[in-house]
Image (cartoon, rainbow, N blue to C red; front, side):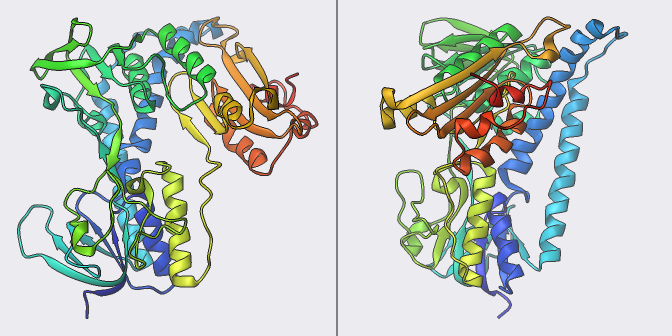
Length: 453
């Protein structure tokens, strides 16, 4: 009986943790299975340590600007190893904190890798491969195993890092090639450059940040290049040669690019390996588990949340999906997660944040004549004295007939903090007129959203 539960959750990432704790709060007997550390991608090798590295990489720029304010720094010594060590210590602290939260919530943490024996039983293997499997039986099962970085199939790919590896380094080499044009590639390119690393970024397409508003991505590109990142478009790696620390990337252009390390930031995929989903007859669509609006798979008692479904792969979305599932399954409160209006940010330098429709998607959906765009482009007051750094872009995409704000976008300092608040207004259906009659808070960057003509 001790291994019989109301709910077994596979994966202790954001979605799994949220669902397990919420279900337990409703009185369910819950087991949470995890073969890695508790906290998932976001806490262990994603959002949290990455943002700490972003802060660390911005210090040199602040020092460079200090003389404009009458502060002349003395001798500055940079030791990236200290930064990386402190980041790992913070991750350790958060990992322990999440384990403690589970215990306080009454959730049974089962260390090891879970796989289906049938639609109601999970076998858990020890993470070290030793010992006998533990078998858990459950009325309901939630799959929340998240995703993993995708490593392209090119010769020598094993010599390169993926994003998970970046937090495990003792220090970074003098020159790094970053492969990819998405948000992970752009964020790490800026982090590395800010830490004094020479960066060459290879982008297969003709622009950065595919899927985001094109004008915004152009402004990010401008800022990154001003920062000193060398971006080469329509170039892909054909092979990686050499040995760790002394690598050569052979490109599609026939060029050989020498470096001390290569980061393959070429996307992520759901982590389905080893789940044995066929034993439970759970349908898989390509690399993902398809679910309905209630997170249900084709088996009504088996659900999935977060990146494993490959819908909107963001931490707050996984958390909301997990809580909505637990409320419905164990408290009878039916609520469906709204995936149509999700704010997102890219912590590149300059920072990008957005909510709602891009200009391109709005025109595609409603037609060019039905869409109006307002924008403001300027250098912020924070850059007035240093007289350096990228200019901000603030942008509103409107439905022409009603003035309703379809999209609110920004590139510049504190973009994510600003768009978080703007998302409330956009979600409530605010119009340009609503923005205009909101009194400006002066002098700020965000006031441009309520004063732009």
